[in-house]
Length: 318
Image (cartoon, rainbow, N blue to C red):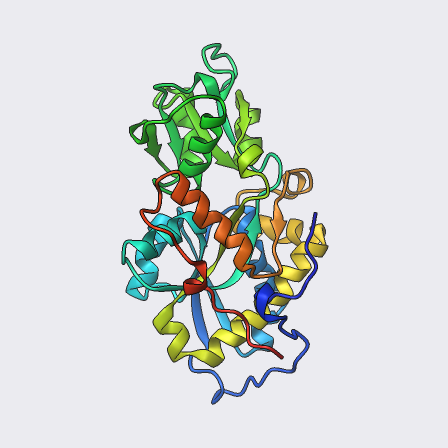
């Protein structure tokens, strides 16, 4: 399921990740970057690039900041508290359309695969066994108006159910299991490692939200402010080169992912070896991301048509 092309905008050719980098202090406008990540497998390439010295080889020091989701990381990016962040495309495109900021996707990161993002309910709750049972139920998601709410809405629609946005209850992923147990919510939308953790604590899967119309759906990419990209072209290019190596390693070697997950998530080594992983993208595809925008328009997440070209910043050709 891994994609092994070099990180580049598909329509514009590939970046040569073997091109020697000029890492002198004069070549980089900024040498220390703060990058927002989520404590889930999607963020693995950043940790790989740190641990393998890919950023260091480019003259960069990268510090990470754990974020709850794209909707909460975006304001920090706008404020300059983050230089880059992992952001789900739903939150990103919505923020761009609303004028919250002007952003650039500098690299793709993660694409859904089966059982990566699921809806769960209490195992002993006979009233919920499928998406058709979600009518009027309270559903926990990590943030509102993001990939989680879209995925649940699309999954329910296939089952003939229309989800009212008021049914969604935002909360951090680690808190969802407890909220499900005590009845604060009736169902939760979770990714690994929380799928495995909640399964062990008495939750059942009622739907894979990345199937049917959402199969192979692009999830998230690495995002910077347009102004930052314009003012720091050498730094951005160095970041892209290092990340390209990490994305390619993540795509081709599962062990590389398993090694880093315990460093920034609560996933232990044993769990890392067995959890379902998505696809680590090594191309920045206009067509793939346009699918996200078109799906958002279909479900009312975007008011007008959205051309993703406006937010893509392809790596420079070697």
